[in-house]
Amino acid sequence: MKTLLKSVREFKTKAIQTPIFVSLEVILECIIPFIMAKLIDEMTLGSMEPVIRYGLILIVLGIFSLTFGVLSARCSATASSGFGKNLREDLFFIVQDFSFADIDAFSTSSLITRMTTDVQNVQNAFGMFIRIAVRTPLMMIFSIFMAVRINGQMALIFLGILPLLGIGLISIARHVFPIFRRIFKKYDALNNSVQENIAGIRVVKSFVREDYEIEKFNKASEEVRNDFVGAEKILALNQPMMSFFMYTAMLLVSYIGARFIITSKGSILTTGQLSSLINYGIQILSSMMMLSMVFVMFTMAQESINRIVEVLTHESDLKSPENGIKEVKDGSISFKDVSFKYANTSHQYALFDVDLDIPSGSTVGILGSTGASKTTLIQLISRLYDVTAGSVKVGGVDVREYDLETLRDAVGVVLQKNVLFSGTIKENLRWGKPDATDEEMLHACQLAHADEFIQQFPDKYDTYIEQGGTNVSGGQKQRLCIARALLKNPKIIIFDDSTSAVDTKTDALIQKALREEIPNTTKIIIAQRVSSVEHADKILVMDGGKIVEQGSHEELLKRNGIYREVYDTQTKGKEA
Image (cartoon, rainbow, N blue to C red; front, side, top):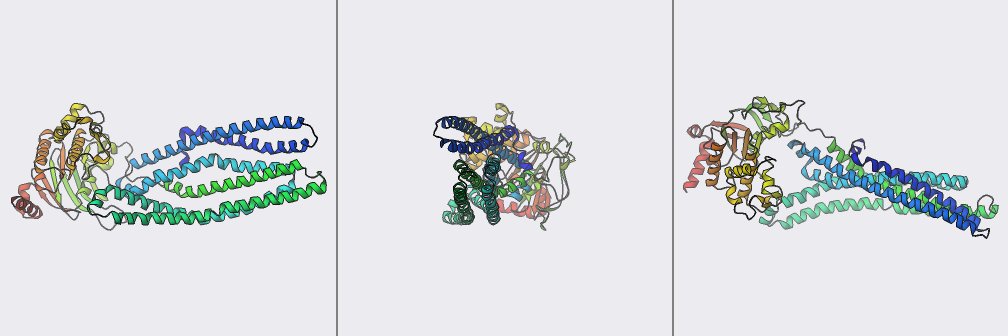
């Protein structure tokens, strides 16, 4: 709770005002039955004077009670919704600082569930906490106090029932809580199924696997439903249990109170006092019912609270060092005895014994089969992962000594899976440089050979890109992503198989532009085509997490190794 309450911030005043207004509302509601008792007792005198006098008092009390109730509801709604907003923001900001390893550990679908369903549960619980959870114990305390003041013996009936209710509520919670813990894990699986299906909908339709995906989703959805049904069956016992105890208490109070009135002829208990006792009894037991609702809500929210706090308190291994270096001198790269595995508990290394030196401004090509860890290698440069052993240096400095923002700003990456965001072409390009001018954007697009198709759009650079870039082709998307990276004017630029969707001619033109226009930038090109890397100063051939060959195009051809085999295969394919 201490961790969560930090997210209240600017809504703290409203959160404090809510229980104050609730307390005033409760006090007034507890005074009303006491005044009603006096009104009933004095009505027997046959005069309208007490009716008018007590009636006016009741109207005033009712108006003030209503006013405080409305104020508490408004403050509660403002505070809880504001708290939910801040909590989502805090979670989102924390996730932005996560390393790739952190994202892998939590999973994307789980993080989405935590920022949506879990936050909503906690928001609802917070709203109840500052209003209902304050109202119910106060109502019970004041009502019991007033009941004891009227008749202590009668008040014992209510006091005797309260422990029985408490035992019932604890028993329900003990059975329900493990079910809700299980439900939220299955929610993650359900969200993962939806996310995976929507992201790969083109593949699903291409292989006509809609029925399979529907069946998989239905199975996950049915598991969530079954668990909810099980939880609700247990929670459904709450209402009849509360009603049973309430009506039992009312019957006992009515029966014993009536006997007191008759036997004592009103000396021990009057009719008005019996009426007020019944009202206090209803208030006490209604408060218990409301408390049980709060109890249920907190039971549901408890697992959500744990899951949210797990993210908020998670400390990423990838952090900027204190007083991290704020300038990258040049684009030189050095790998010394580098080994890497994705998890400390894993026995399999993705990279091992990598030694590599790349001079600033040079062009390096990387070839290798799928799973050769080409992408893993380049991810260590911008410190998306930390090495398990050895060191990676950029500009002569270990990447772990740089301020993370400085390091990543000096490295432009065009990923294998190109991502465009909803917005105009200009807005997407300015991810590379927020203050880029139109001339700078035009130049970057010309280098990436994107300007030629942008000019054909009716709105040109103001053309709106749909989420994920669904209204442009794969090749157009790749060229826009290349232009976005070039706009950063980085010390190092990495192309992770990022020209696979463009034709060979365009690929060659892009490579030529890169050599001529940004000669001082270190260029690393991961590709499947030999033609994309043959003009590189150095070519690396990777296999099984190792660099098995390195050298120029001519040197590697003479060795008759893997590179020569790939070259011959692709050349023969072209001739055929």
